[in-house]
Length: 182
Image (cartoon, rainbow, N blue to C red):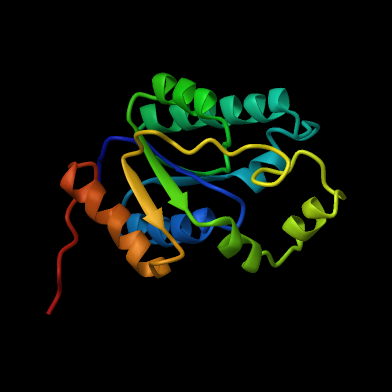
């Protein structure tokens, strides 16, 4: 099925549920016959942005690189699904300007919630000073001012959050409406 590409950009704190919700959305988009690529911040860092640190400049470079790849994909009819903390508003806005069809999804969860979900112990290490420049602890996260969607993953199930995204994409005619069987 031919469709227009676009970029679906999930932003939020570490542990907010960006990748978890994005993966459910990706599965559904693929089930509908769409061409989809995942650009997960952790995966991109190990390949495309290997060698970058976590200074503001390096984080901005990482996000610009992800945005560049997302633009290449989406202009070629692929849905680029990005899951990246992308903590700085100015660089997210810069990517929004670069990408032809950009949908920002703020995956919002309170610090207490993401700390409780922290399976890797990153927040604990950041609070102990073992990790420098950690978003939400020693480095800021600038919430989006006008995202297309806000998911409150402390109040919604993964399925409810994914459904909100899919419904929005259907309503804005970026994806076909799912056909109900039975």
